[in-house]
Image (cartoon, rainbow, N blue to C red):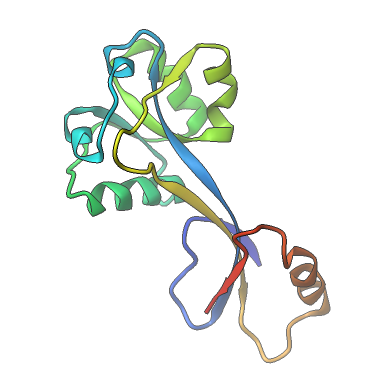
Length: 159
């Protein structure tokens, strides 16, 4: 069993329980010319982006969002953690999608600023509890599943 950021594996052997979603916010350095914009998703083709780590839930969510809007990303840097991205952003004209709770302190302190969307809703990163389907599920997993049922208003089991 494991907590997964992003969509669960597409495999019949696994079951996934959706726990919650985290909003991804597009941020840039305070004072950046990017911070003076309000964007539609299609505008992101012209914005230099710093992408999160490969195979991470936030990265998959961002790339799926861009793909849904037929946007080919202008990737400046990639494969970085949120903490590293937050250190790079104040030094460059670029933007990045970061989970809001991971960047809220920097937004509150004015170190980074949010770039609002005028048309499109920004992407979210999904968090799921994933476990192997088995005829006999261990009691600890059954107890854990019973505890998290109703954990979130968005609770649902994926098959």
